Image (cartoon, rainbow, N blue to C red; front, side, top):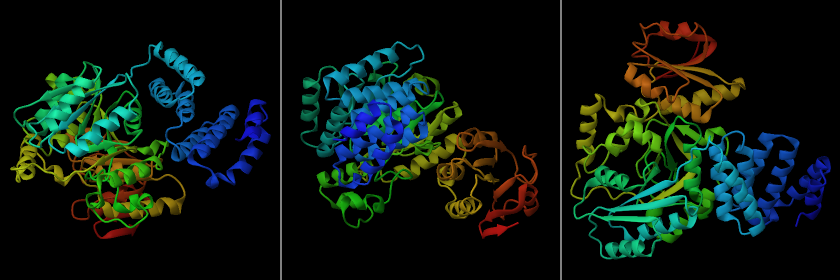
Length: 512
C-alpha cells in the first residue's frame, strides 16, 4: 500500500510526494486504523526531509490517534527528540522496540537505543510501579495485567503492598503473581491496614534504589501508553518532580461523561463507569484514550497538587523533598490530603508538577475508607494545622473568569498579558495557561509561601497586600486584570490595565 508515495519519498521528490499525499488523504477515513497510521508515518517522513519540525510533529500526532501501537511513530518521535531532549528520545525508542514486530527494524531501533545510552546526558531511570492493594480483586487483576502488557520489558518493576485485604482470593492471586514473576514483582502482605500514606511509603522502601516511583491504586487501570506519556512528562526537563494522569474519576483531573460518549456510542451520566460491566467501562475508556493524543506543549498542565490514585514521582524529587523515603506524610491516616501535602512539599523544594493530558488511567474510585467516615474532615484539619491554611480555599480555580478571558483572547487575536491580583496558590493561573499557553500570566500572592507555590503555575509572581505593596510591572501594561471588588481597590486595577482592557471581578466583566 502507498507504493507510489514510498517511491517518491525514497527518490527525494518531495514536491510530488506532497501532491500524492494529498490524494491519499482524501480517502483516509476509508482506511483501517493501521493503514491510516502508516500514511501518517509517510507524511512525517516528508516533513522530516523538508525540515519542518512542527508539521512533522503534527503528522506523528495524527498517526497516534489512528493507531497508538505503531512502532514507526514512536521511532520517528524519538528521532524528532534526539537533539532536543535525549531523555524523551530514549523513551520513544524504548517504546518503538516494545511494539516492533519486524526483526530487521528492531535491530535499527536497538542500535539507536544503544547510541542514546552511551550519551552522558541521559538520565532516564527505570520505574517502580507501586500498587497499594486492598480488596477489589477483579479490577486489581486488570490493573497488574495492564502494566505487564503495556510496559517495555526491563524498564520497570511492580511493587505490591497489600493493606490486610479481607476479600477471598486476594492473597492467593498476589502470591501466585510473585511466584511466576521473573524478579520484576515484589510483594508485601501486611497483617494490619496501615492506611494510604504508610502503605505507599512501605512500598517506596521496597523499590529499587534510584528508580522513579509510580504510585497506583489497585482499582486503577493504565491504558496502553499511559505510563509512557507520564514518563515523557516527567522528563520534560530537570525541574519536573511529579506528573499525574487524567481519568474518569479523580477530582480535578477527571474528564466529564460527555468526553467518553463517542466511544460509548450513547449518552453517559455521572459515574457512568459504575453502571456498566467492568470490561465495557474499560473498553470505552481505552478507546477514548487512544484517540485523544496531543503532542503540543499544552498537553502538560502545571499543577501544585496531583491526585494520589496515579502519580509518578521522580527519584530526584523523592530524595530532595521526602526525608527517609517517606513520600507521603503518615499523619494523614487513613487517607485524604496526603497528596495535597506532597504537592506543597514538592513545590517548596523547587519542583514543577504536571497533569499529563495524554496519559489516561481508569479509576473505579468511590470506596472511601471503611470505618473512617470522618477521615476527610479530620485530615482537612490536620492539613490546616500543618500548613496554616485550608487547602479547599485554594484548590479550585475561579471558574467565572475563564470564559471572558478566552473570549477577549480570540477577539484580540493575539497573546494577552493577564494580571491576577489575588493569585492564591495559582489555580486560576494554571487554568489560563492550560487554555492560552502563549499568554503571559502574572500574579500577586498574600505571602512568600503562596508565591513559592504559585510561581510554578504563573509566569511571574510577587507577594504582599495587593493594594499597598510595590509591584514589579509597568503601569498600564496588562490587557486583563482579575481581582475581587471586595478586596482590591479600583485604583489599583486602573494602575495596571491598558486602555480598552477588561477588569474581571465577582460582578462580571468591566471594560476600562
